[in-house]
Length: 512
Image (cartoon, rainbow, N blue to C red; front, side, top):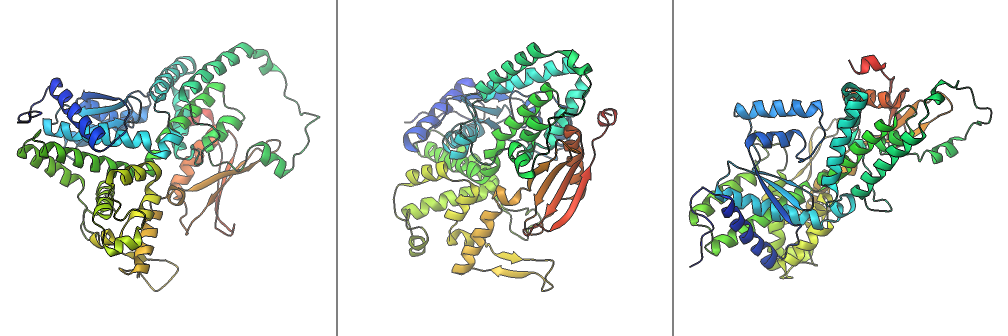
């Protein structure tokens, strides 16, 4: 008779070790997963709330906004207005999984299967994470960032440091590179370079230069617009990188803070593009592992029913007319597509053979899924693998609603071949960061003139920026640039739709 992993709801650390070993056996031998070494830590509810406030990272510098988030989440949790995640998982090597100590033994098994093997495999193998993240160096870099911020606060004052971080955080979503560079990010090497930069700045610093009058240069000649833009690397979509390299009045330590925030933003960039795939993968993996453990007799029928109750809640998808509907649940959509791929690979219908000739009837479920998990992101995953059968299951259709047309709302795609392709294309586009994120670029600045920084927002389908939010973010940008900033919204024909101009605040006002 197969030995049970546990009895009842109680567990201890020896139980967690047995659970991890059992999940690992299924994950590696039966599913063929490739994972980083695992590090599992058990935390309290308060520690989970603390992790919420610092975007789930185990090491992070201090900032007032994290305390604000902690207070909000704690108050909501104490009032029963929100629950807490069963786990948080960190994309690092070793892969760190935080488990709530309040979880039952069944839930600990579920979250270990979900996080320590599902998410872990996806982090290690998906091409976006390979391009943009340094799993080996992220924890050391976060430790460096935390210490560096503390040193800056001691040397330059907490208020001045917070002012710089406030501005950097406001621009964080526009502080990323969207296309791979010539070399992969190496955070350990970046930390060493930061140390060399600080040492060089201290060695060459001479305060006498500050007292020398800054007269006009007789050798300066007006640069052509093309030449100036080329020297500044314009147009530039990474606003934090441009400020770090070109802002005329930033101190070296401020540039280092921008660089830290930029690297952390880049670390999270793949996660924003793979929410459906990442959660779908982890949910599919935990379902397969838990099912196999039950079939092996390692967990009881009662344990399996407890698991199914939680799993059903996770993949619940409200109907479109349900008051709880707020779009597609990424767990539900991702898991459904993974299961549908399994069906197409093993039990295809004629429709599947027509739509998916490369995988229909291939009879290698995990081989196909591992390839999908490695080579797609949400947008391409949905565009490639969302089947007509699944669209009928979710009752998907497409509505056309153009305020410039007086025809009202029109059903633009129904359940026929043309409609299926339209629905799939539109749903995929809703997960394309190039389409849903504002496309804002630095396009020009005359460093020998008024130094006004000019940005363009390329408006797609009339989606202009919220005026209040745009002005607030531009204010942070102007404070870092220290000269006027102009943002011009233009359509596909370069027609100017709206223009914002913001001036930097005086230092006293900015820190008040």
